[in-house]
Length: 308
Image (tube, rainbow, N blue to C red; front, side, top):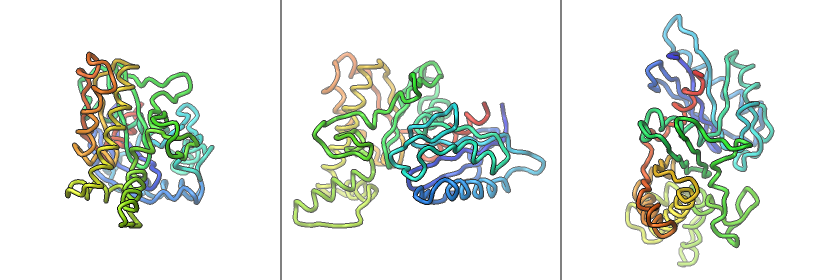
């Protein structure tokens, strides 16, 4: 199974591509903007050009074995289709696998981003050696994936684990998916910024051009409004984890994605919330830990899939 492959993490705002060696090391990386609004041809063209550029780092005489791509869901991994990801409006109903394979002349496999990142951490990171693991990715959106005995649990229609679009508050904010009060509206990077802006406006200090990263940085510096936003986000994450623990009886929850880089600003309140929203016997077993791989997790998971 040892071979050179490329893993591609297709996100709502950026695409990160990594060349992975037979030793499961990301040896070269390229990053390009997504710009999903430009449509499939433009996006696939940029992905193919960046992937071709990465091949310059492959040892002489060695041919790539394949490419793995992950994307926000919903995704049909069996047909290689992007279905209707809320954060990739310009790429709905795109046959991404076939389009990219035609451009590169290589086998391509498509997977949900949370599932790919989960595989990365399960085999190479924080979940290594565990029997079961739930992975939650928190970035522009919120997704999740469940692994049992080394296998992804997909559900009947490959949408198992979409905790980001379950409801915390039926009267809450309107989510891009069309529902209200989703976990994503409490936790994702854009929503951290939105909630922080609301608090600034209420305090008579309105500010534009706020990002989720800025909220995290200000919380780390002691900004009380930013700390409140992060505490509320952690509470939402802990509530979601408690629900998953009650439903699945899984103990290990690995949190990845850009927002997870906040560390204990997010995970501390989440850990505190779990016992309040689950049976004591369940909550006492739950562990919430950060990914050991961060940006490399989805790429390594895609590489694992590409080799198979």
